[in-house]
Amino acid sequence: MQLRARVAANLGLLTAVSIVLTRVLGFVVPIAGVGALRLSFGEVPIMLAGVLFGPAGGALTGLAADLIGYVINTHGGPFFPGFTLSAALTGLIPGLLLYRKRSKLSVLQVGAAVLFTDLITGVLLNTLWLTIMFSQGFFVLLPMRLLARLVTLPLYTITVVWVSRAYQAYLGGQEM
Image (cartoon, rainbow, N blue to C red; front, side, top):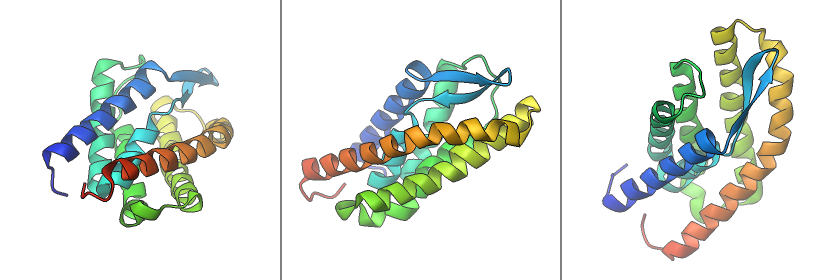
């Protein structure tokens, strides 16, 4: 990835949007006395970074959003590097799956990529990190986290498709 001024500015903007959506507009739902479920749309800008600017851009955006977001607002919890890894993977995986096809993405392609990404990062890895941090059972936390994904997955998919198409139309075939 060549980090030109336009790309750096766009990645910075997506990082800022992710931080606001996660740390300011998101909220935490306690499960079994632990803040185990954060509902937000902070993953969408990270996925968009991967789709529009490639796997490295997505991973960089996820990494920056998690680290800077934690410094701004910890949500009262300790820092855990596993969540930073999950955030980086949230941008990396859609970038690997969709970046080369970004000019002609179908809803089905994006939906499959969002589902795969969210199952790996949001459901499996983040549940594992919470289990390690708070000594709660993995399968105690898992059902509520899966239930939340039934709501977020279609919304993430629609948003990623809509914004990526709008961005492609805005560029009008120019190189990013």
